[in-house]
Length: 423
Image 1 (tube, rainbow, N blue to C red):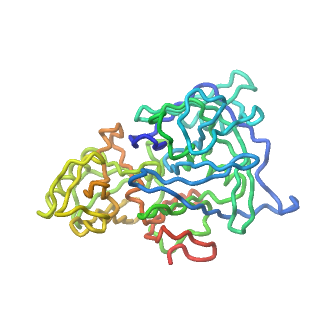
Image 2: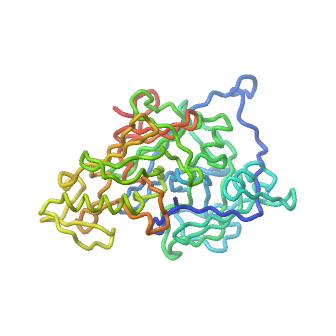
Image 3: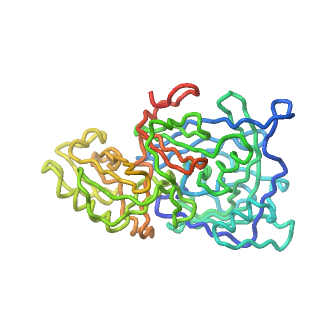
């Protein structure tokens, strides 16, 4: 669920044109420095994150792409597979972005006959057809908020610094978006594109794993104070201390899902039917389906202190003011109770959601509910845990073992390899 230079609004719906492509001239990296012999041992990489839930509305990473490498800001999105940049191919319609538009060359185009193109198209529409072996891999991305991007699949080198301090430059496939209709074209977008980290084979994470560079594991730690870190590989994963639940097959494409959950508020069940939950770092806010949302709002209002009054705030639909303006969520958290999601899939795996993980204090000094009604943006019965709920937690998507984990962590400190990220 991204991009977010418009207010986030719903599920990403990827619809591909019937003209596709991706050719990988390079093989998965093998051998040592001399290129001979043994298979390269998978390593890990860690990247600082920038941004916040409010007021910026996203977390993003800087990636160096091309030869010579040039920096681009990418919205970190575990809710979609395709990484893409706004680019000059030439550009028909592009937003103003932080860096000069990426410029592809004809030699970088991925052909329709490439397997990644077939996977991209087949996984999303079930249709993949090549009229010519030289045909390029075109795609169209449509978002539930009516935003869209049309582009072509290309491949180019990504500079990735690994835990052993070496830098690798694998050639990876990504989208070159030349016709965007997202947000306001007059405003400068905070990012140059999207970093798709879903479980599909076109995902950058999957491609790095196929190259033998990192294991198919990704994690993020979003700081409540802004910033945080992102990592590929499993060197930072606290396997023995995290809460784990098996990945469930989501009915909503390649979303990471821990399966169905029951909802509790203040230690008691809210009595709503089982909720299908997915994790999505490409969504600033959390979205509940209509029934759990309305039940939660009723419970919240029934427990409110008399010192809080409901107030209109342009930032979010449901807000409260106190006797004096709030400066941070910590000023108001004692007035609210924690939520808990109990996942049936993980032997009663619990995720506690304290008030700071579902409230936002706006520039007007009000406390607003960061959980929204997903049915109002076309999400139907899907429940999305967005950035606000994942703050100050390390969240791990382990595609190697087919599990999702989480643990409270100080996300404002970027860990060093060989030391614990949780100290």
